[in-house]
Length: 616
Image 1 (spheres, helix red, strand yellow):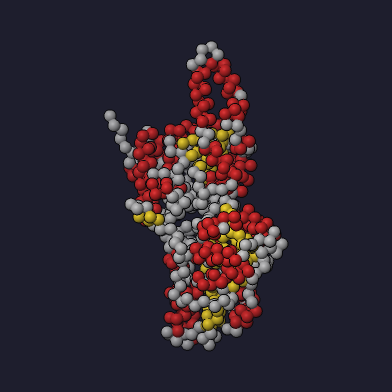
Image 2 (cartoon, helix red, strand yellow; image 1 turned 120 degrees about the vertical axis):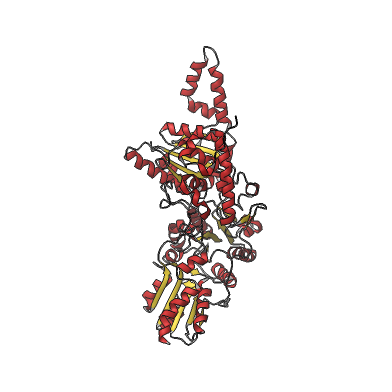
């Protein structure tokens, strides 16, 4: 009699997962993959990583009891199936939409999300803290960290491993190995894990030997007992000692990450040990969708795409990132001192052009922003000009290195801060709103914020060839959408003097919104002067004089208020009213979020009309 298929929408999740047969689980995984592809094709998001972890997630929820057992997902970009299985199936169509569920794990969204996620390599440390808390509270449940091999290129993972292995807690670390982070993994650990992936013969050989001894008369059982008691010697003979065993973990794997039975057997064994366990799971990134399997990098994080053709809406050459990358190549042809550094984000930051043209001067250090900054310091100290291209929210991890390893020594390095400002659907963990606040606190740092492509090219050239210490060029995600394409013609600022006592000050892409608002006000006979900063920090004497020369100054910033440029100008000049971002910004479309924050052209117009309309 044929077995009934499991219907994803009729199950009580996650409880009913434990009632299913392996065959029903396999069918459920197919349904989940179909839902993942459909939803991400409409909403954008992380596809390849989630397709690779479907069976692993199902197995986790069958073996463990969430939320009593805490599953900590590293980054969270592989946790969509987890969301589906933990009460968010009915809202999954709202993924990454404003008012909908987040693309990352959020404890305020579900009790099954054990820890905030968004940035890489923190899961082991967080899970260890949870495991210790459970131990202190007499709770025998487990803390499980699930991380990809890309996260193993980040130093925080090793800090966590170093403490977890000897912790005598119920922590389980699951390494989801697929040979990819966002760009292909690099470094010695990536090579080591790749070698381990091919050594699944260990478990098979161990099982075969034990089975043979089971059926060997008289001597079989005694020999088997000896083998078990000398398991370390046995393992060394077959696989040598693993790095993770040397750190104090029991090691299980490699396991087939798409075989439910094998995964469950490994997870149940780890659960029964009640000590630190490291499980190595091999998966295929993009599993079940041919275009994603063939191009997992392109389908890591995508916009909407057509399912039938698999054509992702990837970042085009018409973007700030690509324009920066191409201009850097042009400058590097003339100056052999220029090097480029990325932290596993070659394509995301536009450095693929540099990597192709100057492979000897291109360095992908993995997900290791702290190392990247200090590495740039080493290059700079030896006479090179390093350029580190990095997302604004990821640069946050390199703050100490900016101070200690670049600024104090007066070393010249260029930091290209991509995704500055609101980035949209990735939400709080990825909005680039803090770089102004922390970069302006680093002595000797020069910061540029171009509003269009022409200014970006000029700022990059100045940062590389004119400046002498830490120099930053920050720019938004996506392409130049400016309608008011007035650039500074190489100057550090642009002052549009309309003879008004009111000044509107801004920088970056907000200049377009401010210009639109000012034009609308002018149509109602409300005049304002405009000041666009291109070199936004430190302030020149001319900028201070312009600001002090107006009785009313309104500053609009796509940045966090505390530590903002507006705050610094207000302290210096006293006549500045600040309109900046007051808190973390949730996920949604960038244009909608800017409007909600009062930074759209219409909201700026309405605010200024309210302030100035009665004075005309």
